[in-house]
Image (cartoon, rainbow, N blue to C red; front, side, top):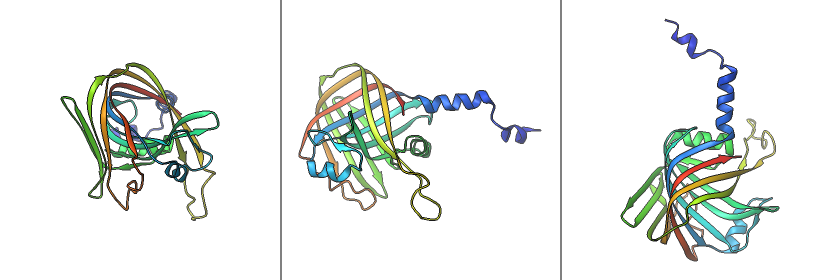
Length: 234
């Protein structure tokens, strides 16, 4: 029949508005995640932050791994990330160093919309009784591993977060960028339905493809396991 004509027809204005609505407010639903807050060194934070970002007090960093049950933009996926605390003028937030993802859709969408430093990886996220653990592996190297033992109830309710990314595209002739790189500020509005806290561990393994092993872990401050929904805007 005429299936090929429908496949290649121009999008309607309503379809375009619906897509733009997804870009304007992304929904990440049924998320389970482990976050481990740790102290690194001020020298490390300064070395990692591109201008105009500046270090925030405390030289803090966060490892994250999670399972997103569904979303309105890329479906279900697993992911991990490593952040360092930063600020831009009077905005405090987290600068993302790396963000491995389990699906091509999550990689492409995050890079194109927010400029997230996503790469395709094998992600593990597991829970059993009081224990939560997860990891990210690329090119045969498990370069990021997190694990925690949850021993106390955590806070539930709404939490606001800020993340910083840089969005850019290199010019085709190799002469710089198509336009000056843009600093993207992403705000997360999370509804935490269940939370537990406890002790945790962050393990980096040396990899030439994902060089995070040089980041010192002076001490782990807290491990937090949460279940809930997150809505993001950029």
